[in-house]
Structure formats: structure tokens, C-alpha cells
Length: 162
Image (cartoon, rainbow, N blue to C red; front, side):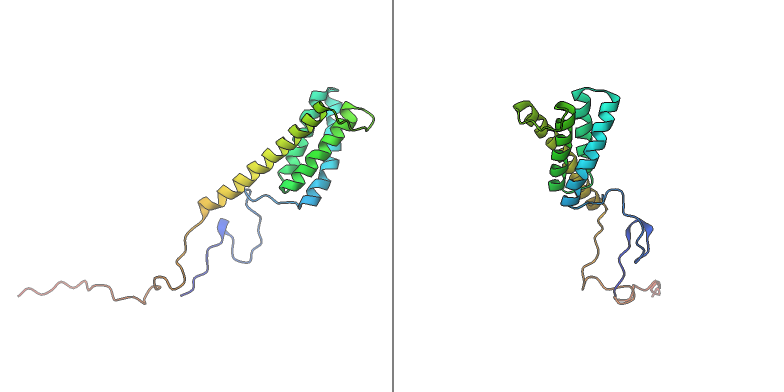
């Protein structure tokens, strides 16, 4: 007997509904990388408005890269982190859109990329762990028969006394 499998979260089969919160909408790598530039620009503008320090700009650039990394793949997260760093380095540190290649600036690039990868790794772990706890086991095809097809239940009559 074939029985339809239950649909999670009380939805009926065929009902599109909403995705569970633990399954993030993943933007493709190129789209996530392209998203890094506008997000980095917004982060740089907010950082320069709140405080004109390099530390504030770095914190906002890393937060922007981590935010994009939550929504994209690992290559997209790295591309977005590089673009957030480029906006930070070009307009917060050097002020005229020039990227520097000195050792401290490359260390900052590594730090922003590391923050983005940690955020992406955390999402990957959360997504991988969450569904496994809710997975149910279903009988394999050809498993135990359905109701009414097995042997008859034992009789409830009491044997007569001799």
C-alpha cells in the first residue's frame, strides 16, 4: 500500500508555502559577488557618516561581507569580501580610489575574507545539521504490509472449561 509522505510544517502536497528559516535562499556565486560592490559602498558611506576612523570602516566592511556571505555561495562570499575590502581600502584608507598593496592592507583583505568565509561556513553547518534532526524514517518499498493484510489477530474468546 502506497502512503503519501507527510509534508513538513503542516503544508499540503503541492502547496508552495514558505521555505523554513533554516534553509537560506542562496544567491548564485556571480550574483553574490556582484552584490558585494553596492553593499560595500553602503557600508563605507554609513561608516564615514558614523565615524571617520579606519576601524569603523573595517568593521562595517567586514559586516557587509559577512551579510552577503549569508546569502551566497563560498566563491560569491569571497568575491563580495574582496569588493567590500576594495571599497574600504580605496575610499576609507587611501581616499582617492587607489588600492594599496602594502602588507597591512593585504592583511586586512585576508581578515575580511576570513570573516566572510566563517559566516558562510556557519550557514552551511546550520543548514546541514537542521534537517537531519527532523528526518523521519519511512518503511522501504516491500516492507511490512499495510493494515488488514496480515494474519488475523488472536481470538478474544475464553476457552470453555471441561
